[in-house]
Figure 1 (cartoon, rainbow, N blue to C red):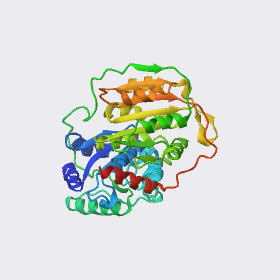
Figure 2 (tube, rainbow, N blue to C red):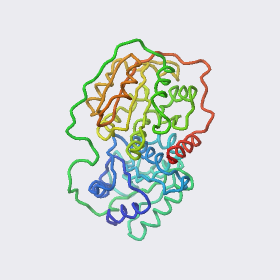
Figure 3 (cartoon, helix red, strand yellow):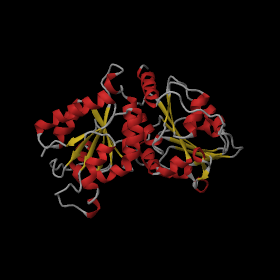
Figure 4 (spheres, one colour):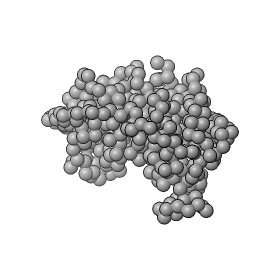
Length: 393
């Protein structure tokens, strides 16, 4: 058994200062220690997949793997119970793997064979190693002796830096000694905030093309990063203007917002724009609460809502029955806009003295150019280009 401080401080020496996750009783002393150190950053995620996407955003804002920009990479840790691997499969297989965005995973081993546990862990316990191996994530047991910590972290960072992909430590029961939680609440959360009044705009709906063109006009390359949701949103943004400050998600539906949050928190020098779609937003609505609570003033969330899953044939979503702006307001966003008029975008970017994340839902027309191309640049090259662009500033 080790002390929480022994692992966290050894990790800090290797550049790990960002943590996100969903608690497990095995992780309690570990999370308690991190929460009580104001020089470390812990984000309480709505689900484990959001935590992975958030730490991917932190990695995106760092020096990249392998010290590509001549500096130590910014490192982060996603923590979860092994049951939460189910929630994390999509971002682990189509975000971190695809874009080569490394992170350390600490996964607890509930239901470990030979160890009595609750019935809900009866299946996930035995298959946890195979789950990680199937996702091509190398793993080892979390260290339980002080002299094991440094070598385990060195193996993890060496792999992460050489491949750009995650590495997992699987934590058995009793690995970390108890550590009392001496503070209440969470660091970095906006408290005592009055709900933003929803501002509504009426007008004529525009096409996605026109909306994205207006976004481009409001996002200068030298000071902004634009992360576009999977599907036609990213493809059409690429077709209009493939710029160095843009990244196009090709999977991980719904993960653009927690990823943008991780980038915005770790890079306050940049304005970060998350371009969302109605289907993606509905898939991970828990992220609204996380962005509302933690979202800094350099984070912009724009939802382009055409009411359908257009890239898969135009099947309707339930978005027309959802007041996204009211949800954003209730979750703590500092600005909440809604409407059909393209002026919503101008208001979103031009609003002054906004202390927290800003949100707008713009209802748009359906329809996509018949010859819409797919990005010809590979995802990992898009990531590398963006990291070079923001690292050189």
